[in-house]
Image (cartoon, rainbow, N blue to C red):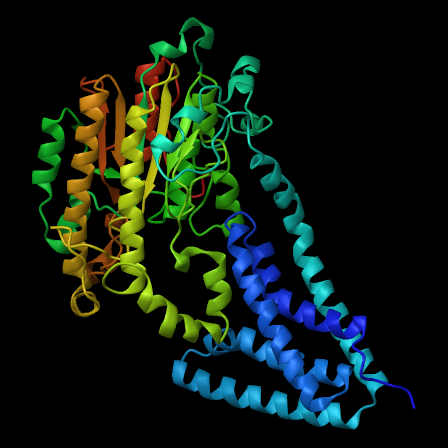
Length: 535
């Protein structure tokens, strides 16, 4: 009699591909946003779980190929259950239908495995594995060029620190960073800036801009430039319109520090971070509102401002806990300790039954007070801000472009104005009041960072703005506006220009940066006028 107890390569391949498919599928579809290191733990968990499921079914069914069929069905159900539920608008009905569907599929799968021969079961395993591999290949092909580009961009330059827990950990390791790129006068990422010309490029402008000879100005003559972006910090008109809140005290405090303040700046292209920050960092409308994710991520990789400052001898330092900024060219960088909710691992879990284990046993025990995402986010926001303050002590011979993106007062809302965390009950009862409190806390942190910079580096340029205003509220009268989201596009906009006056009133984020660069670096970038469809 022919023995069938020994597992075959086809059987193992079937189980392995079933396990890796949900992980690799999301990875290929989110190639720029996903961090590979976040896949390690989730992959190990899935492999161990799949191995246990196969071993149990093997002990019960005995025959390897038939065991693999049943194991594959169980794994598909477990790894995709919540995704199936999400397809149904009503969550309760979704759980009922997903459960019924899962039970029926498993029942018929067991019946099938009992009736067919081992050879037929092996053929089913092979067809199943080939089908999944083909689907993965279809998703990998368009992602492959971006994988290569991402790999090349992440190759460390000589002397560039790849991770750091604090600024002091890396100051001694950065003396020779980016020397080769500066000597050659080229972008160290391989010239990616070639397809992003001066801000007066053909796209979205009426003429080219002229720049002075870079060699005429020595790097030590340039000031350090600090650019901080606070996500969803409402401009004056946004806060007044939606909350009846007067933010003039904070803006007056900024003016007393020497900042020029605009009360009526708007990023008219979009009330979305994913649109506005790529546009800001490229000084042009390179991304349209609600464009595909991959497009805006491409424009975040080595954006024009990075090339602009590197070509002038600047080191680039970045701080952003949400992995939103490209830090592959950074000399100093906050090590992106993202919210678990923001990682690809979380989204893989979110499609599976494992999300309930996470919610019950892992999330409640995450550090901090309040609900897990808020407390975790709050600690990382503070850590990123403290790291950013450390940029003023970088102290080498090169000027620095210090870029910070802070996801506050954006949700998850973390702190009251006095810095104490909100409880779940408070957030559920009145999120709008909590937003204002979180905004006031953010304002106090902005003043603290500005004070720190001005005390140590008064001859610097500091640009503090938001990407869009608050989007939490919707008012009935908004529907009568030509643009219902108009007030949500009103931004915070403050500029310190070595203590000098500079007119930024009514300017968008892009035009504010253009004004600063033209004033300080002698460039002749043309202002960008946003027009619907001008992309």
